[in-house]
Length: 148
Length: 127
Image 1 (spheres, chains in turn brown, red):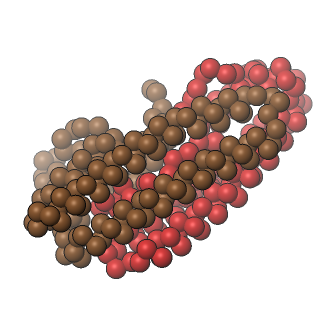
Image 2 (cartoon, rainbow over the protein chains, first blue to last red; image 1 turned 90 degrees about the vertical axis):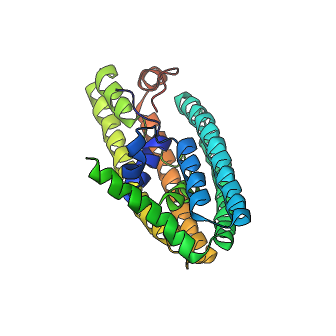
């Protein structure tokens, strides 16, 4: 069986940690970042009743989706570069250091963007709605378990 | 919680541990492509240390993931707390990368150019 790219394996691991995998599995759709961010957008539109705030928060979910797409593309590129570098018998240590420095700079920039989205999301969503977003998952999980 | 999962995933980023990917294939290639016993054993010893280092990192990284998820799930956690977790995780990533690069060059020292090409053939990506 073909191994899943590590980025997707990591998603599944995180989904298992949070229990989301169980609820997301009820529609049997593939748990790609695209699918999961769409699920998040839908959850926001359901839970946040104020239209303006809901739309703003949904836009942030779209930004997350875009960030995932960029991260995935970058991962493919980095993986290919690393593989090629590693296969090169003559590659110098400095070439690896430069490669990782570039990759880490990109990761740090992405982390800053996501931290900003996270902070902004919390200014748009109340503590109660944040909790409800969690409850949506729990409800879905209960429905899912009943279907077993 | 979905939102925490997505955010945590993006914080942690991809590619931090892709050096772990393909190590099984590397071990197989060393076992089957290197005919000289002493070279093969020496190379396998380094591959074992690569595996151990990668596994240790994956374990530590898993703990960071859980801690980060907890912070993100908590509405009252501050951006500074999230950033502190992120920074600590990033420092671990740097140390890990440094260690893996050193081991990669240790492995290279054990193999000739021809042997290296057999262990790391280009064009057969394992991801």
